[in-house]
Image (cartoon, rainbow, N blue to C red; front, side):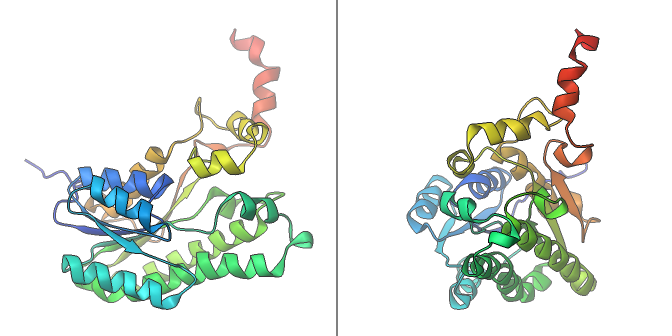
Length: 270
């Protein structure tokens, strides 16, 4: 009988931004598949509550703007579990106030731009740098959460989308330079995902506009993205590295305005 390569038995997974949304859904899924999970988040109380829900898990305090905090997160995980097999860089600078001020380049606040890159790009780089010696030992994997906005132009979120594009190139660079050591590095690019933070940050009309462009009958949930992350983290994806897996319900796969076309041709399929 062939073993289930999607199982994570005996593997240790470190998830940044692991206390809510996509991170929490991924922690729960990987724990069900046998992994021991370190849940790192700036919201430490929420990380601790989730760790208590998942036996054998570890909550870790994390501030991605502080290099010492990131390095301590990796060291604490390695010390507690004795190994590290997967780093899932999921945390990013988000929230209603950030989203409201992250607009186009002409109106961009320099401090917001710099902070976005400090958290999203610099923070991810430092986490990878700290984790790579341990991942070489375990022949492990890195999975970075990016965004379909890193692959498309938009009227808003210039700082966020360009920072995620930078992480895509970092993903490829790590895959190229460390594949010979047995380390894989991939990225997952969600579309609009129905997390609590998104519901708070985006008005319903904007969500409905994106939903109209989705090829499914609904927007994705955190569990949908968790499945993609879990696949890339597992041995089932052992021949996949340096890739971006887009999980956006098909939003980025078609010509613009498909929602309007649906309305126009609706009578043909009545």
